[in-house]
Image (cartoon, rainbow over all chains, first blue to last red; front, side, top):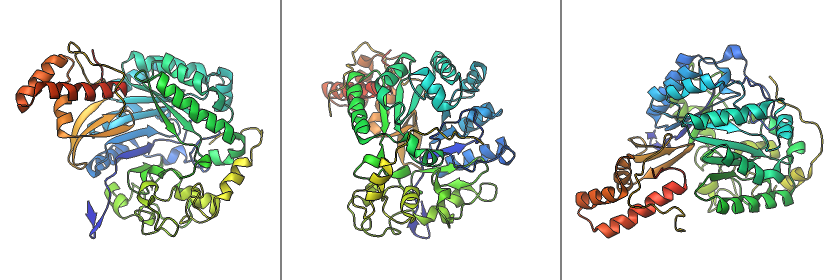
Length: 361
Length: 97
């Protein structure tokens, strides 16, 4: 695809944040602190149009998320719309508030895959982290229902100081529930996660042990379950290729219809985001100022500008660079080549056993 | 690449499970294997193999058909198919029935 002679990448994935309503209050939630109100949510027909436009752009997969997507009463119609647009659909859910009956209607509507979050293998710890008593038992029950219906199941486990010592039992739990895949997602600090960073941050030793444990579990369970891991980048040498590069592989539509290059992008001042109520998705992808701001490598300064890894990790995360250094064009300080790399070690040392500030509307 | 831990046998009837789809996509420039939160590019040969994985046909018959259709040595095709399908089964992208 080209616009004005400049090549625009073809996106692969659409993150559809259907609502910011959610019964849980997970302290690591990546949603922004300023959550969208129910009254501002896009309706079914608009989502259906967004899905059609996404497919026309080349998008292959939609991730139905939020908040809690099951809080939407029109979720079966939304899933049907995704199927009609020929998008592969992933439901990213807490399972809380999702009944077996609704799950069956989602399966009938053509849902391809379900991802359920589990906060810990220890049930009382899990409920404490989620800020919802009884969450754990509901999640395990619905996980079994997913498998009974013949849908593939992924268990997503966000890992942080409170549960990082139980990765092995968490993976065994995922296996016992019939999951074909488990995501060990080391916590990332955006939105509510950033607010609770001191309470969530593991030690370097805990992270190194966790990395060894995951490798051991991969060997032990090869062929039985796939273990994907999201890196704990505060303890890394190089940054993550955040969202596969700005405006390159994916786009995020918020409940109120704003289109973001990533879920945290609104923290960066001066970016202009367009809304699907006013523009087509194709126009937004190709030409909205927010998408153009850091697409490609022209915006880079040194050391990224001439770094041999620039098309591999794209200088890391713009939002993280802004949050930690005050400059969205800076090298993500997670990178050991960043002149401000010391900030990250300092931040990682700021751990405190304080109460969680639960995510609430 | 390490040898797959899953060894596909001649009497297996491989099939793509629910939630794994082979599709051709113009915008993406070819064959794609869609899976839970992942996308894999598939070359033309992989597509020909996977199209035959319907759960009804044995591995033996699939290899016969490929050898006939592409006039290629059966042993070579057998080795390639076993390697591909074993790798996919390990990633939970294929059921061996």
